[in-house]
Amino acid sequence: MLDTKARSDSLLAAFPDAALLLDTSQDKVVALNGAAAALFGIDPVATHALRFSGFLGAALAKFVVFVEEVDHRGECWTRDVPLYKVDGSPLRCEIRARGVPDQAGFLLLSFTDLDAFDKRTQIAESAELHRAGLLEWKRAETFFAELERQNQLILNAAGEGIYGVNAEGKTTFVNRAAQEMLGWTTQDLLGKDIHSMIHHHHLNGEVYPSQQCPIYRSFRFEQVHRIEDEVFWRKDGKPIRVEYVSTPIYDQKVLAGAVVIFRDITERKEGERKLREALDEVAALRDRLEQENEYLQEAISSERAHHDIIGSSPAIRQVVTRIDLVAGTDATVLITGEAGTGKALVATEIHKASPRSRRPLIHFKCGSVAPEDVEAELFGQVRGGGPNAARDKPGKLELAHGGSLFLDDVEELPFEIQGKLLHALQKSTVTRVGDTREKPLDIRVVAATTHAPTDTRSGNRIREDLYLFLNVFPITCMPLRDRLEDIPLLAAHLLKLACRRHGRPVPVLTERVVQQMQAYHWPGNVRELHNVIERAAIVSPDRKLVLELGGGGQVASPTNVSVRTEAEMQELMRRNIIAALRETGGRVSGASGAAALLDIQPTTLYSRIKALGIDRAASQT
Image (cartoon, rainbow, N blue to C red; front, side, top):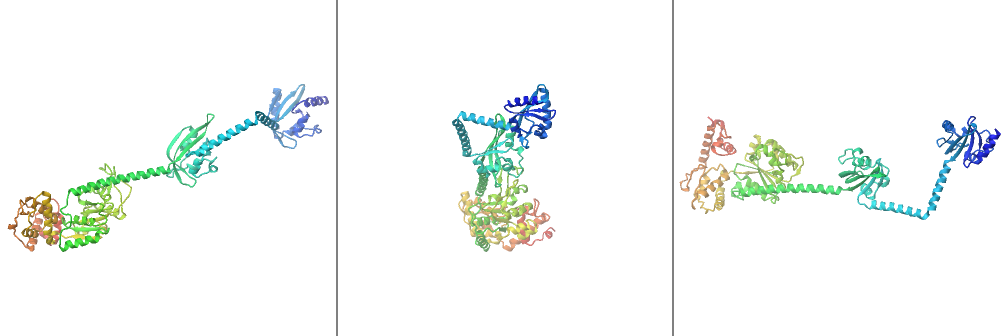
């Protein structure tokens, strides 16, 4: 045994690395060299009872497996068996082992301190680099530093925002423009999930899952995406409209992430929105001007009988006074009077004397449009908003914006339209048929009705609330039979206009002709007077005026006029109406009614029945 130990000591002393001889059967260190003693922190004198398992700790099982592998192969090495010094501190070593010839159960173990080995390697590499020349190393360092600086300068000089993400969606770099646009700093974003910070919601508030994001698809599925309108969220919570390109990037042909280049287009989008609104407004104004022009052309082509209010009677003076009182205000006016008494002329004079005279007066005759078309005519329509809505069309309310709207025969409006009209006038907005957008409305309303206020309200012809809204300032137009003193002035004015239109000399308006006209009842009022004068201008061959009164085609000469008193005319009219009522069984309106038989408006006949005190029931017997 002593001989074996002596030979082992001489053999171990020749080993350059730490080495020892192990008797595996007794777990005993037979011999070790100085390097091994230094490695394990062993006192070289106290080695006679040294057990190797004391250096293994919990790794004894791994060492047993290693010993079996050595026994099988004859020689083996491992770095998987941890070792510990005598004081318990860990060692990181590579163990090499081989059997000892003719000595069963003995192993020769050598140890390489890996920490010391790595340190020597670093020293060697540093020495090699040093040998390659400090100057070359400095040049390389300067080159890469300059390259990085130039890259940073390029990124920060770019006007577009640029940031990069790795394959996990974490931010790798952010340039200065991106930081300024987003309000986030590099410290805020680097290493963070940037989607959850700047791209988490759509503009409408809906959550934007990262799996649906084109940027995600770039660094997951190697796709390039160009998006022209999305939203990024700033640090202060405000959105910015952006367009961006996300492109995958590679490291040695391996997908490493994506780079995103984006531009803030908030101002551009806002400009586009304002431009669209301006173009829509221009289109609406163009349509409105076209409609106004069309309306004005129609108004010009159908020249009115007279352009000013003619007359000197107390009734006319009262109307003129009330026009002067109300014209300068925006008060709503309700004009009442029989058909042909000049209600439209009063409305025109109110508008002409008002501050709105530079804008048009839009005339809407409520009974002239089919009930199903009234809404579109009054409120306008958008294309596709109705069965015949082939294009956008402003209604009379829009056309009157800034000016005045004259609602003639307002009682003829359907009840449901009256409610919608009242709502629009009270709210000062209008919504076209088929549209949801409200447009501001600034109009002055003048309405007219042929019914007396009591008849209109009690007969359910007009809604109570609409009547109260319209009847702010009432004006009554008296019938021509109640202001006979105005007939000479009106007749002379109308005769002059008619002769000018037809290129005829103006006949003499004699006193006898005036008396003849004043003796007539004028059921059609000024409108009928206009027609009579128009016919007279046509049928009068020379300066002798020939009148045709009553619409019967009978020519009466001033020299053959049978003059009747006013009482006689009233009684004659009363008997004539009673006869007509008896003929029609008391029916007033309709194709077979008394009004059609007398060739007058039903509203006119109702007024005369009331004025003459005719009992309709008694008149049928």
